[in-house]
Amino acid sequence: MRLGNARHKNLIRLLGFCHNQQQVYLLYDYLPNGNLAEKIGMKWDWAAKFKTVVGIARGLCFLHHECYPAIPHGDLKSSNIVFDENMEPHLAEFGFKQVLQLSNGASPTKTMQET
Image (cartoon, rainbow, N blue to C red; front, side, top):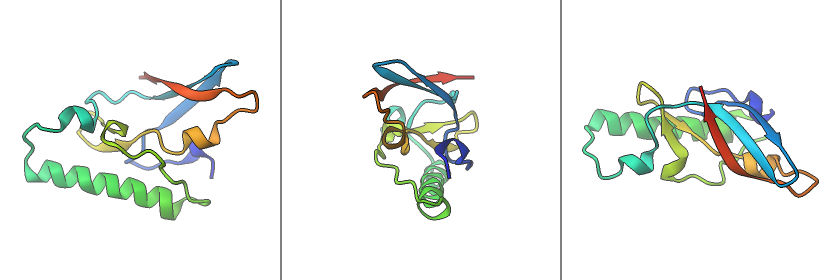
């Protein structure tokens, strides 16, 4: 499975990418409600916490067990969990760095968000 074809409700959608000699730029869906790192310390009810944890687990389960070959996330952290307009969590930055290494030495160190 190619990363661009990995579709799951708890994965951010990669719309495309472009590159030059030094950088690779990744284009994602725009998710308006920030990331988990920004929300740590805020008061959440149990339903919101449960929805977040289950969404993260479902996204990881999809990457690890439903993709062939399996796609290890490789960089799971609070800033790589982003929320859509319904506060549904989406995993971001999964596997792209490993796959998009270019033969000219460019590396995907910049990301962009788009609607």
